[in-house]
Image 1 (tube, one colour):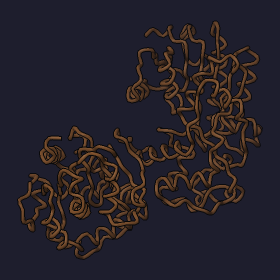
Image 2 (cartoon, rainbow, N blue to C red):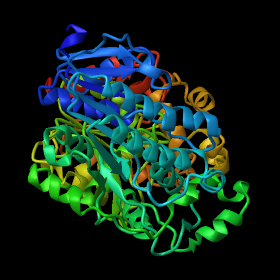
Image 3 (cartoon, rainbow, N blue to C red):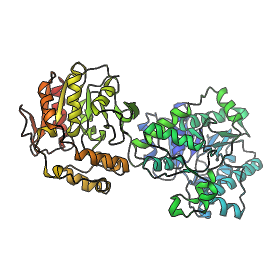
Image 4 (cartoon, rainbow, N blue to C red):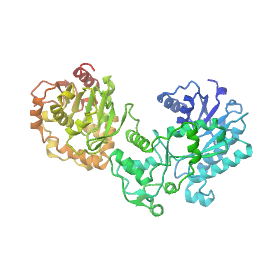
Length: 573
């Protein structure tokens, strides 16, 4: 598309908010020029992954720290709406670095907009804390370079826009949450998930408001179209956001971890050394009890039919994403995923909860991610879940087979139930009690049909040892390639409680071997036994399928062969 046809310029288009805004504008039929500093590929790949038609998109290279934004004087002549989503957001910045983008760069955007023939609107993204602090040298020393520069930039943008007659709207968002946001409040959630949050920062009245990415970008998209929004400042946040202690309790309840009850006042946090708090002192200025003038933003949203999503649901969905991506360290699974309540456990699930053709249960020390290579080859709907107390799931208040019964209660299909190693025991007991709910049972490397290894008999596995494992060391011990499944297992084992429960499970896997062999003989469903040639079933009284060259984890070393076995066992489904 020719550059001259773009009617909207989005600066900072490769950032968390910028790329989502570009997607929203394109969906609304706008001709968008997306300004980036580096290559276009990260933005275009993200848009393609989001299913956005990019036929009306032009990507341009710009630098707001330069007068004229580094664009040719005759570039983008048709642009009438400009969004400045570019900012330097980090703590511990040098003052000059922060000011170059957040002050001087923001003024450059105003001045470039003034050169348009008929600018309709400049939308400047500021912050919900602006207008409440000073920008003197003392302000920089007290607040830190990021917040002080945002405040100074806000004042400078408003002044320069008034001088040049640029129609300006300022958007002051709270903490924007959604897929891809891994800073700010996400770092507190990260500490909560990993057991590193002994106390809530701030007091009982601390208010750290949020707004969802979807709501914020929809709000931004309508601002240039609303003539009444010109010259206005809008604080966009959800007034119903719980105070920080309850917000953390909500996230904790959803993901199955206990949130701290004790709070540490901000005044005390400021005096503590950073090695104890683990936080940059600049973050403490965001911990306040202040409230914000949200009435105008709420009224504008209502007038355009933009509804605010329930904050509890938004926080839960974001927490699912954070855990799925290991707080930005990996990509989220393509299948539906998240935490659900099962038999008292906050259970992590991936896939179809209602009508799967396959239900997949993992063994130790893995989690549901260990089935991803096989699931992608089956060509049918699957459901994988972390066993209670293992992986990402919290413990259940009942036996694993009763947890499994509740897990499958909503399932309307008759899936093939496949279990690996430790999960074979609960699967056999479930199949004995509920033969009518499944089409068959596949047991991969069932330990009760194998000789107990010496290492298991000695019971030397400890939680501390598990927590020290790297991906490479665990992969070597399991005899599997290092990859996402092992990465996920290692991440889970670095959580203290998960490591402890995994170590306990490893020490007790062989306690019911005799009973399980008797129960297996009584099953009234088709059973397929599977083992690798390096991990045979010498005690099996029935014939079993062998995966050539595989050990105890054939689903990781030979996923194609395991997928073929499962398709055959399920009648090709």
